[in-house]
Length: 189
Image (cartoon, rainbow, N blue to C red):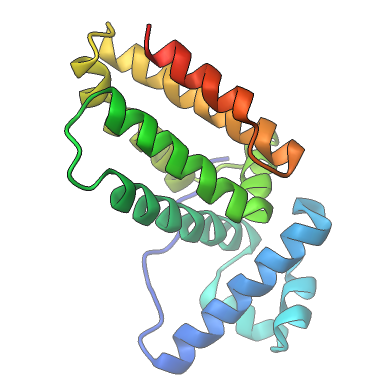
C-alpha cells in the first residue's frame, strides 16, 4: 500500500530538536538492526523520549521510515547540487552527480540500506517513489545533451545502474572503483 506522509514540520526549536533526535535514533537503529529492528519502541528508547512523543511527530512507523528517507535525499540533493554547480548538462555533469550520489550513499550507509530493504519489501510511500523518479527526470537534460535516445528511457536506465552501483558499494562498505569506472565507460558510449 502506497502512503502519503504528512507535510507538517514542528514549528518550535524544541519540537525540531525532538523530531531530529527521533530520526537520529532511527538512523542508529537502522545501522545495527535494519528495518526489522526499527520499531517505535526501539526508536523512542534510543532517543530517550516517551512512546507518545513519537506519535506527535510521526503518525506511524511507515511515515517515520519515509522521513528517514526524506532526510537522506535532502543530503543527496545538497551534495549533488554543490558538486554540479556551474556545469552544463552533459556527460561531465551526469558523472559528477553520480559520484556525489554514491559518496552520500556511502556516508549514510544505514539509511541507504534501509531504503533498499524498504524497496525490496514493497513498502515505499508515495514520496519515496517520487524522489526516485525525480532523479531520472533530472538526468534527462544531460542524457539528451549526450545524444542518448530516447532520453526518458536512457535516464531511467542510468539511474537504475547507479542504484545498483550504490548497492555494490554498500555491500563492500567502501568505494568500488570498478563499478564507478563501468558507469563512466557505459556513459561514454
